Length: 159
Image (cartoon, rainbow, N blue to C red):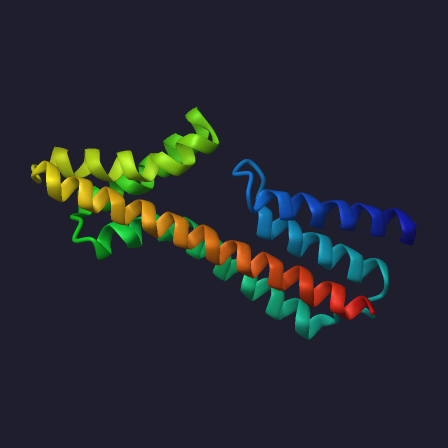
């Protein structure tokens, strides 16, 4: 049973690593779940409860950064509440209806449309949209760094 759980755990970690790039998979939660399952299968002898708690915190932090980064970028570019809501909705609509390309351009288009609907001039709306895109890309970079760190910590505990 330990071998089977270990294989499932490793597959979850690999799927999670892919999920950092592919928007359909919840990358960080899969990585954490795989590490937790592996450690459970081995009597919590590799990672341990304290480090698992820290990795859970990293996972939650990564989820927050991932979901809020586009809106934060729009805000930093001077966006109104409509631009922030547009960036958030654009991220969700882009992900579910257009896929990976939509995930990239959804926050941009959503922020621009939100600002235009609010009555902002086109140049300001585009600036807010670009801020949203930069925020989204920054969030994706943070998520990738956290995933690499989680996997590194796990692998280092194995040897």
